[in-house]
Amino acid sequence: MKILTTLYDADGSDKEIDLEENILEKLNDKQLLWVNILERDEETVKHVTRKLHLEKVPLKGILRVSERPKIFKFKDYYHFFIISVEMDEQGSLRPIPIDFLVGENFVITVHEGDVNYLQEFASREKSENNIGELDAESFVGTMLDLHIVSYFRVLEDIEETVDRMDDRILQKDLRDEEFLNQMVRLRSNVSRLRRWFLPHRDIFYALSRPDFKRIAESDSFENFQALNSHFESAVDAIESSRDTVLSLFDLFTTKSSHNMNNQIRRLTFVTIIVGGLGAIAGIWGMNFEVEYFKWAELVFG
Image 1 (cartoon, rainbow, N blue to C red):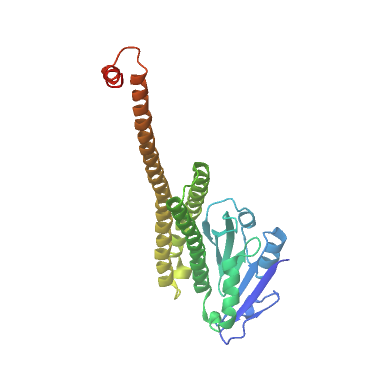
Image 2 (image 1 turned 180 degrees about the horizontal axis):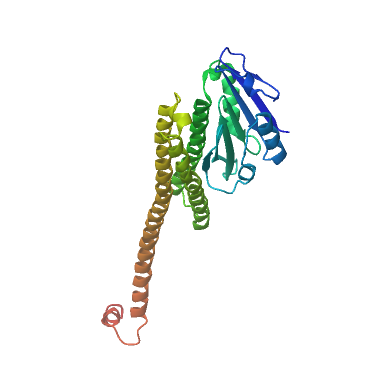
């Protein structure tokens, strides 16, 4: 089973532990348990939820990742599903579905394989000694903020690609086929980001509403409201990236028109020269007398 269980303690003695029976009963307000499940396996999820004595766990919903982001409340915990994103070395986007089960003093995350920002969080926070002071809601707020950052990171990669294409368009001729292939890929990436990210509005709005008592009654309520603003900023950034990608087409069209005008000017000049030579040749080749020939005959005999 691929399970990482970390116990954060406010006294600084954070450590990885084995998941044991009745572990929740042993936790105090200065401790936080994070169970990170690295595979979407039914038996693994059942094993963890049984150890924590969670009831009515939506196993089918956790194992099925084709749905849009969602959130459900249960008696002793709440469950929500998000889709983070990463970009591989080839510039292809990879969606990362992650399920959260959150209760008092514990957070369970379920996903397939490693997630970069979760690994970064785990390694960075090893040097911190105040994670145990956070409640589960504050911990989740941090995770959701990193989730938003995952989209910002991909947007940065897209913007860098756009900048490189700007330079190529301005500095040298870019073939139509190559340009269109790049445009299709960039446009597709932005569309996918938008399609994956916008449905998260249901999650962020639900968690920041006053009727979500677990958060409204915690010290994290204002943080989740601020998280909404961060979410909306990401939405604006994604929408802006669409305009940025489309601006490449305008630049390419302008450059192509400029090149075409230069070619037309060259062709016009060549046409004038060839046309002039043709006119002269035509005059000299006419089958009737021209005054010039009479004059030449008189002068030169």
